Image: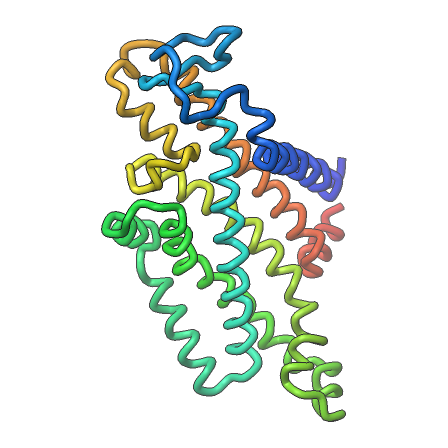
Length: 281
């Protein structure tokens, strides 16, 4: 099997995983057997009535995991869409205009890149009110930086291409050239960056929620982790198998789905990688 076929299989597998998760997130109220906020018998073991049992306050764990798909994916997509839009816009401006605008944007990017991202996110989140929107805002602050750098590097190459020079000589405005000639060639990089950023946000949100810095009301996978580790019997019984393991597997599956799709798209949409793959086959 060639490398390209392997990438197609991985891409299809990742797309299938993400499609299932999106369907679960959209139809969570119809799929979940119970309301995750309702309480039943505490610490009930898995049974036909509660497939993953109940937690220390009596919430159905399976329902928590299903609703957690909605919360975690919502945060990931909101952050990725906003951060990629900001990063792409600033990268286009910096790469095409040059001068003072490029200098200022890239110095800001350099400053953000020198700061330990995860450490600063934890510090900021610790002093902010606990809510989903505050988490989204914190992730966006740091999520646009790498996209801006990548897009700017690509635009520096594209702005000197013959078709861009021709459009400029024919009187095309800067906005028209950016929209019509440069942005379409940057989109493949942006799509891959969007996929990878979404995977990073899934892990980061789970980590912050696990540390108790997430929204205590929202039932994300990280929040489920947090409350599971606060249970005193977690380490002395098999509770972890039906309380901690399911959300952990969901996080792993989601990240793998994003990674497989991103890897397959990167080699399909990047001409340079296509050439390398073609030489290896």
